[in-house]
Image 1 (cartoon, helix red, strand yellow):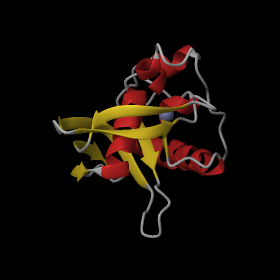
Image 2 (cartoon, protein in one colour):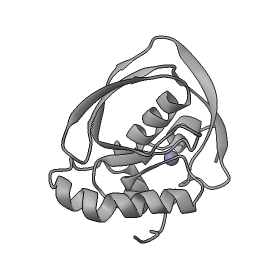
Image 3 (cartoon, protein in one colour):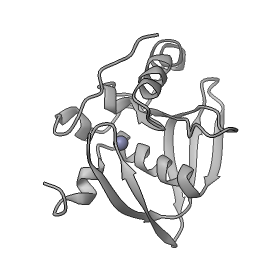
Image 4 (cartoon, helix red, strand yellow):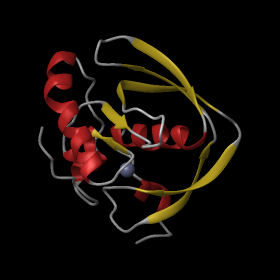
Length: 153
Ligand code: ZN
């Protein structure tokens, strides 16, 4: 495994839409382990492939609680957002030093594939919901910077 360079704003690669993963075997053997290792070494709880300059639609999340395991979300699609919204203080490995209160829907339904190409639907709330929304944004070329224009420079 290798630790990759995390790209930061305003690198234009952060603002591109990712391609769908088609070669699961290559992505899961060669890219997912490095992206995970990079996240852990940077003390992150989530990272999208976009953030290391890989234009493939996947992210990993590890909330690093006692019972949390690393989850890989491949080709994720958010299918439902709650009407209820809540605000959480967010940071981003690609926006070093920036923290902002971001209002988002409180809960989310997401479909995604794992490395065995099995499709899942997950309903999440709390921190996991916010992480899923934040990382899915990255795959769509959206960062927290898009939410904080007018607040941050
Ligand atoms: Zn981020």
